[in-house]
Image: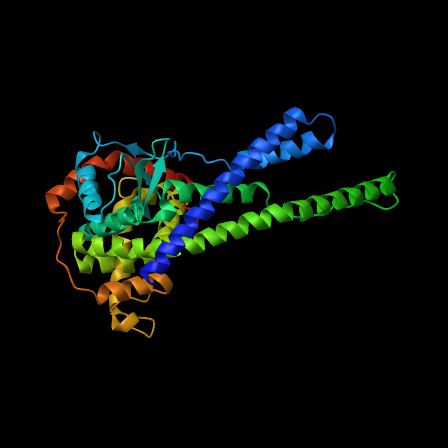
Length: 379
């Protein structure tokens, strides 16, 4: 897509986001007016309350940190933050203010608070399964995706997308009853029950028809906004890959992209370990304690890579890149990086630095491991 087309799509995205915010404000003011001043009739306050409910559901709201996720600040983990700051500078992104840890095979940046502070959400399975330089590549890719060039992640357009999503959820269609009421036709009051059920279903269908218009409008606007921001989001992703290659080396960036395919297998293995911890006899449970969970994840990831290296490259491997059988966007990113100029590592996570970070992550790793072994993984 040409630069002019990208600029036009971005300007249109800002226009649509502005319209969403104006409509939200209009719904709130109109609903407030009908509710406060419309008591001459019965219907005006009811309509006003409905408009107020939709406006409140669509209101822009600041992000929040997960209160249940382990959180560290720079004073708690200076070595980890030093790595993240260098990666953010390399990616041209604003530095993060906090780090939270989850059991997901992912890494991303969220904003929280009215001042839109930045929090790096690090999935410990991704960290544990990756060699040191791939960790640098993964965090740089995640930080680069949140750079200011990605308007989808910005305050104005991003809050409009979240408003549309919240509004869609507020007016979404109810789940149909899987088990309709059963009663004997000869029971006392059976006719009244059947008549009441029929009237209730009729009112439910009418309310669904009334909600269909706002639900369709919100969903269509959200899809339009996603489509308009797709060029900048894709460009931000490619630029994040380039920054990752410059920071961790091109080979590490490629390996980090290929390892995205391990997410499902790693999650299954962690779930298996959690079940084993809860079900096997005490004589064997010592093999799956919270202290060595991440070592087992690392060993399992290494085993998966060995299997992948011994597997011959098939037609799914883009342009003969070894071990890359990704599809869709990942395949395009791998293809692009494989044929771009190759870069050496600028940020090297050596053994002393890795040991310092591992010491800082010991408590969060234990906390997340305890939850995984207790609750299992969401598959």
